[in-house]
Amino acid sequence: ARVVVLVSGSGTNLQALLDAVAERGAAAYGAEIVAVGADRDGIVGLERAERAGLPTFVRRVRDHGDRDAWDRALAEATAAYEPDLVVSAGFMKIVGKEFLARFGGRLVNTHPALLPSFPGAHGVRDALAYGVRVTGCTVHFVDDGVDTGPIIAQGVVEVREADDESTLHERIKEVERRLLVDTVGRLARHGYRIEGRKVILGHD
Ligand code: GRF
Image 1 (cartoon, rainbow, N blue to C red):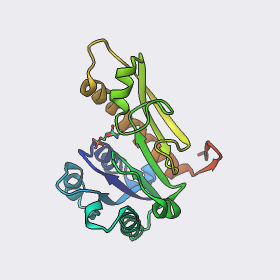
Image 2 (tube, helix red, strand yellow):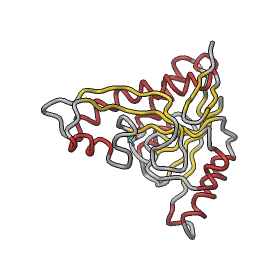
Image 3 (cartoon, protein in one colour):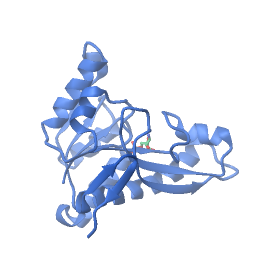
Image 4 (cartoon, rainbow, N blue to C red):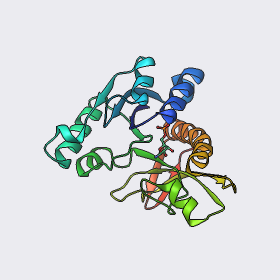
């Protein structure tokens, strides 16, 4: 499967995907990363892509007339690489109608909390503030809500007494990277269908 990855930050999830392809080989892993897109320049995620020799593209909201125009531009840039799957890996923008019209059902996001608890941009902080004893990460398909789409896989992380947002997020990200690599590989190798809120993976 051809995969375009979207990033906004450090890109450690992207790196985990790149490592999986490099270590296992695209054929065995089932997916190859064909391009990396971002909503800003100068981020480590883009450097990782360049180091891997991948094409990159940046579409910044402020370079476009409005949010819809940005969304269209992002969708067009992504479509140019003809992806089977698009992975939003720490991409901190909500995509719009046009992007979903083109890539709905093939757009995977990773979120650092156990959805439907703690959606939004501060999943780790909100879980900590709530006082939950376990949290984790969720890999899900994107629909037109914020972190509301069909859940594909989840991983659990215990909250420790001494945790702050950053220590907890780091431990979540360790689980998250493995979960994302595993999930993208499985979707790519086995195929899947979405029935309502249920994601049904194909088999070997
Ligand atoms: C991940 O925890 C992702 O779920 C969250 O931001 C983090 C991105 O990390 N929204 P990275 O850029 O992949 O290192």
